[in-house]
Image (cartoon, rainbow, N blue to C red):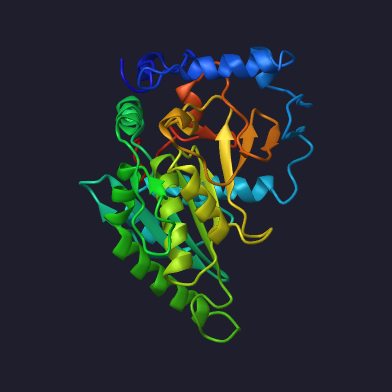
Length: 338
């Protein structure tokens, strides 16, 4: 089979090895383990001290510097709310809306059904929130296989290096709602800034938060760059289950524009054996953006040079549907199990 080998949703609780376009991603994991014999399958949960260069692991009472567990869980709720209906978001009364500590005022819900792209934009005192909806859960297997089948293409904006390349599916999904997103953010910034005490400007006095899960995380990566390069906004980005979006040149360019300070660091959260962050494969020229925080359940901050922790030998698609201990499939009250 071409693409990522996954079990069906009916049996996805069984961890499976991964393959990608004829290459064995699982073999990379075995090589990783061979190089670090102190790490075994049983160590991936509950590990407190990692014997791997570039990895710093924190137990349940600690977390990486600058990484806040409570704030990240808020981002999970906000990202999951993107799966809820626009009607529920408009009154901020959806299942996930009620779990957030902030009551947001709805501004817009950019949507393109043909590209399966959707987001919502909202604001509260001092902040603007942009969250992108992720993959339909019941089509996760096909989506990952399709993701591997598409080669890198030029990113295609003037300010980017000419050899910066990205996955065409993620790029096209975001660009299908790009104009709606940008106009919605401008409106939200105007509303937010009008309530702030500072001088008027593009989001003056208001932090712009960008988040997303799965496909939505990939769209959030594209949107964050637009906010910086087009609107002049420095966003704060947190993603969950992010697939690789582009090549190394794109990742370095993106980081140079977005990760400009301790506050403006992209936290890329990976849950245990989630298979989605492992694709598209590095063998196809892809490289992750941002700093990985691997949750298993302790926090591992993955360091230079790759800022990736490597692949576990087995994957579990259910881990893609649960972040920070919050199960995405628990959807009720205006939210759809997509």
